[in-house]
Image 1 (tube, helix red, strand yellow):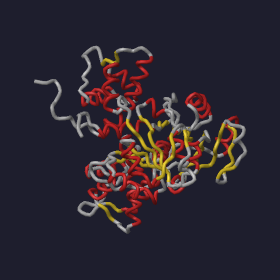
Image 2: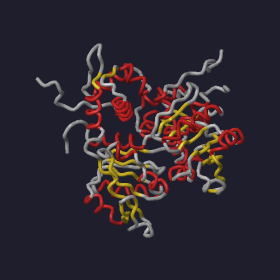
Image 3: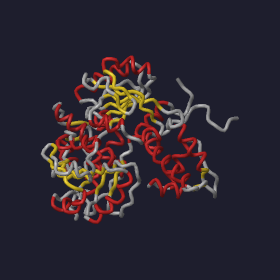
Image 4: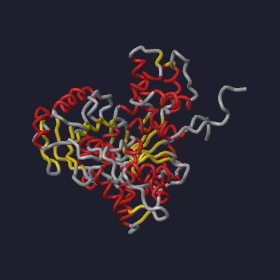
Length: 217
Length: 217
């Protein structure tokens, strides 16, 4: 009898959402030489509660030691593996405007396991120029670049009007994960995951907290 | 007896997270001249389930009409009010690098109720220049700008090393809502809300979906 279930456990999306934050907190704990943390400590760092931490980690097969806590190194290894930090996911940025260029220069990707291996743009004036060691390629060559660079994740920062057309080509080329910054809802097959960035929505959430339904202040 | 509770209902954070998406879907429904939607239809548009929709809306005092559904116009009005779309929240961007400049030029803010009223930077070469009708001001004048422009929400796109120092000044100046793009955990009093943008974390979540714990493919 194996300890691990033979069928992979389906981890709820809300748990998956919290995993990158847990990993960041645990890496901080490593830096502060804290080898063991209990669920209350982890909850404090991550801004959640202890019961949630225990539930979230149980989905990953991590149960800690009663009365002691979780081994931080082991948690970091487990989470890093699941979040693609270990093998370095291969990322392409499509659309090299202000946002695309900001993301391409974002130092946080590399250290968090994301390698930007290709940058594409439609503008002939940009194609062929080099930025931080990556040469901008033409969107016309999209399919070839995806295959050549074995791209796993695409970051889409193109105008809303172009986004669906490009994502259709990405799907045909076998891409299974897209982070979409274009303010448009993309239609993709079930086996493709799209995450929708929504800057204005983030500010609206802050706005909600400013005035929680009552004429306070 | 009033229909509305006198004490404001505490809306769970996970519900608040979904509100901007609901609002976007409902505005689309308005555009398609759909005056009434039931919870199943709304769930389909928002990518959640009908029970969740009914629960989320009940926190807002919206219960729909049994067998009919929800009045779309009334929902849009309610959500727009709570998310600050009606009164236009006053936003300052601090840090006019590539990301700050991308956000400043983001057309989606205005139409979603966010007015960028000030842009600040530490670089003397940038201070005094104008972008889209907004003149970049010096970070030295932070407190004065916050008061003069009645800034409600700050978007922070400064280097990680500068972020905490600036947020301390913001808190002292009375700012209660901060969207932080700097890759650092900010410490603020309980009455200040910080939302942490985490681009690398977004890609890690995609990565998780690519390989859900089993050596598939």
